[in-house]
Image (tube, rainbow, N blue to C red; front, side, top):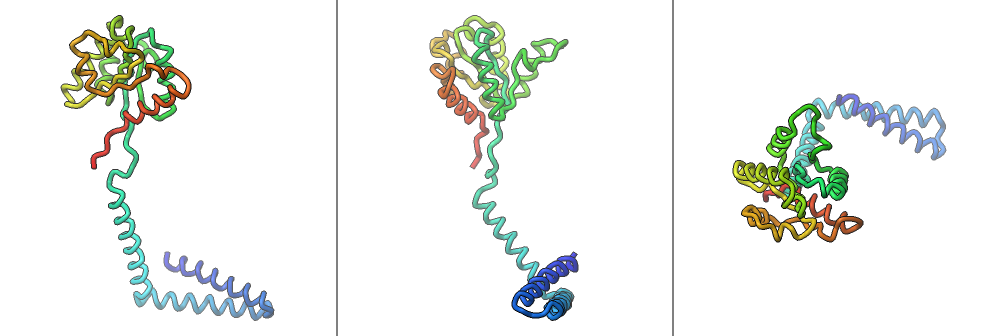
Length: 230
């Protein structure tokens, strides 16, 4: 390996010297001879230096210096310099809010969030309740789309809330990530309301389309980033 490196460097040096002499007015033969001699001398000197350990020591010193600078930079940036991971999520919603949820799914997909929702991701021929239970257990968060339709009229959503709360007890961490389409969560007469509201809810009440929706979606995704432990 060292021989090839030296050979390439020597050829480059000799070629440069030959070209310089030729341009300066020397004959083609003279320039070639000088370049050839320079290449041979460089190869011999490099080989002698390598065998005696001179170049090895220099290269080792350079490598250690580079490694030291890299480690210092890495420590300065910290072990958590990599971008935080986006948490995977399950989307709990009422069919009445499907139009908005379709927009939300597209926004999450564009921002690289791994999500699951029915019926899009549900497997045919398998019990839906079993799939929902499994996905809530396997995902980091449950995005709870809060509206009058979901909190008051949907037995499915209320059941999914209970599954998510059960996961919170087992994991000892927050799973439910509420987002509000209206004021229904604030007005919900349910013993689970206070616990859910302990988490700052995403506010989509006036952000169902256009730039306002994009801004709210960005904030939602930012909330799905895992906290950095300093």
